[in-house]
Length: 317
Image (tube, rainbow, N blue to C red; front, side, top):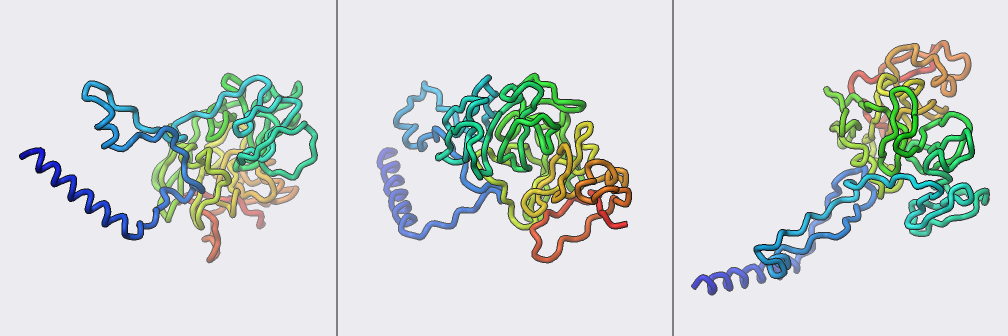
């Protein structure tokens, strides 16, 4: 009798499945506007029915599949530059088009116009006295420089990075970052394992760096009014660094060596608007810079809505 009931239940389920397959499937709802493409999930677990038939009661169930967000970035190897599954020779080659399956190692010095290239992944790949810098706020390229990095520095564990700084895993590689990263986020402060303030759909929540910037998502392109704040003022940054707001349509903040002309400076006082970080934006001298509450973004603007209390530098007298 029990077997007959189970057969009847299975028959009903088969009919329901067939009916549901005949309908148009519902649209897939994106998990996050920050993610620009679905995450690759290697080794997805088999269905429950397949597990039941293939695994005995005495055999432990397989571990659940893990997202690429769970995996830390690769520790730099001496003399090697990862290049989307390939390996370039540091000092002799660079990796072009690093996010694409068409990524290629080419001789260093080859003329190119690629915006996503890698010349180094730590300062050991550079000449004596140089450091490995990454180039823009979305980490699309890296290069060797004898000057302090404008945006940030790539590193390997154990490298010295500066006061209140440490070498830690970022979303795609190891980088010199704040030892205790934090950002104001609504009525709270994001810190610890979730130091980034994600602004999504008018709401603010704390997230990890890898949740905010999935390593396989490519260019950071949030929806209008959304953004990711890795700092909300100079106190969130290491010694000599400034909190800059920029990225696509002023939707991303990060601690940088300096804020270039197309970046806003997030500040706590007028003094933050009159130092080297503000020179590029306000010109020299910048003694007239002031720290003010931000005005509301104009209608149709993509600019992120900043948390209450966060202020910006203005160049007006």
